[in-house]
Image (cartoon, rainbow, N blue to C red; front, side, top):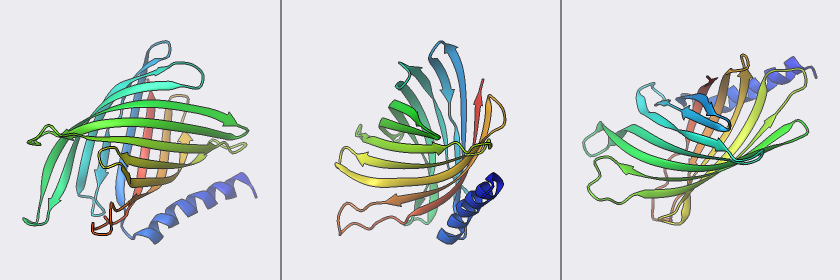
Length: 225
């Protein structure tokens, strides 16, 4: 099978998966901007826009931080995130904007095996809503594994990833993200991507209502300054 047929098949699977899962999936736009300050140290700004399936704004995220490459295989990073979420209040039947602050610390590694690039990230996050009356904060470990495949003779790179959210306060996994996508480097510093993501929620016990899974079509853009 030629490379163009392979890419067409991958794109068809990506889009049809979202269509089968949900006729009107949510839409996310993820942006990444980075600038090298000194050797191995980068400044990053990663805003996001998230929309409901009717294209009404769900939330927007402003995230910035620093990452430092310790050696060939290990990078550490720290981020601050401001998120404003349009939460639905069923008793009042209205949406209310609820801002929150969050800090994140990352440890990341990646390596190549033939045409595959495998990466693993451990992220610790801690945060709370801005107007929360108490000082109580949520804390998570987030475990992400990702695999990219370099197709011979093609610039398009298919990838898959799996991310699990471990609630440290409740000591259980409450959310899983499965992602499949295609990345396309426009040049050395610019990259576009398209992805489908399934966000699945886990129930704490049989008495607690499980949230409905969320199907997401996303676009991404990365710029290295």
